[in-house]
Image (tube, rainbow, N blue to C red):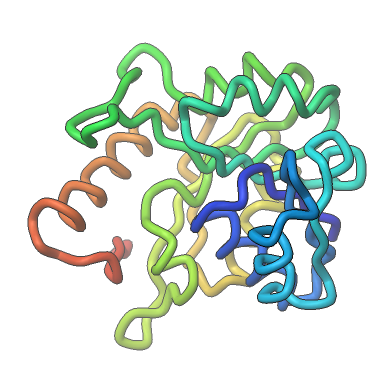
Length: 209
């Protein structure tokens, strides 16, 4: 599968590296694809990866993971150009700068706003409810951490679920894209426990039935 990563911070680099090592063709986007930072990212991800401009990344990819900071998301999508027909994985949380709450919620979500900015894209909310250390290793005490996802396109959700399973997550369908309104506060719970209540960053949620 051809996967583009918009944003090469900790989350984007971790997801992209794992997918590249799993055999997918991964393109990391950057305004400076020849920078030392991007060379380091590509070197770690291996031969199935490369760096390119935002426009090139989108054009050459079937699935695109949006992993920029929330404040940069709208501009990144404008720069991306035509996203019609692409599967767009929204990994973002609309966090306030001090991590004390969410900028939007209840009546809308970052996922729904992303869908409004990326006209024609098949938006799936996923990979937002835990931090990048768990993305690197989703098995805790030998059992997989759950990864909820939501969206309005069944085929796109199936693709994203498969990508999550390949990383080792227990992928669970949370429903339509409006369910991002509850998944984003769940992410805030993880963040507050991880960084303010002393849980640390290598833990996650599980489903018990």
